[in-house]
Length: 149
View 1 (cartoon, rainbow, N blue to C red):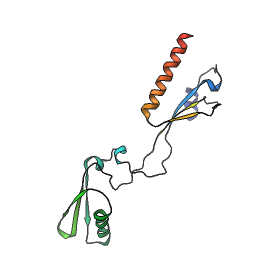
View 2 (tube, helix red, strand yellow):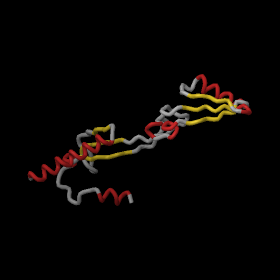
View 3 (cartoon, helix red, strand yellow):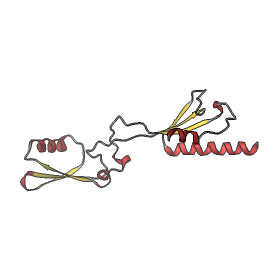
View 4 (cartoon, rainbow, N blue to C red):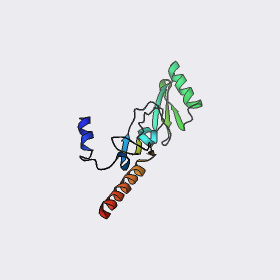
């Protein structure tokens, strides 16, 4: 299937040398890092806030509550309930306790085509919108050149 897809995107007759082409690509490498990216991943806790019910009668619960109060750096209100439970209510707009895994996309434009990149030049766009704009402008330049002959 991959071989077929590559063939569909190549010109039947190559009229120009590889350096006369530009290749636009989007790659999404495997994520090897964990990033606190609540806003970027659309985390519901970040959007609406959340509650954590902690049982402070257990050693684990005592450690969790101590961490929330003294080290978490998050804004919260706490309410003691019966049987040693404490409910921590966290405001929206702050990082949650989940380690979100993100897979950043790499937006690249390189000289050349599937046969190679003779100049070695590769440009990386930071945003999809910039890459799409670059691609669109490139298509317009090609259309203009084709119409001029």
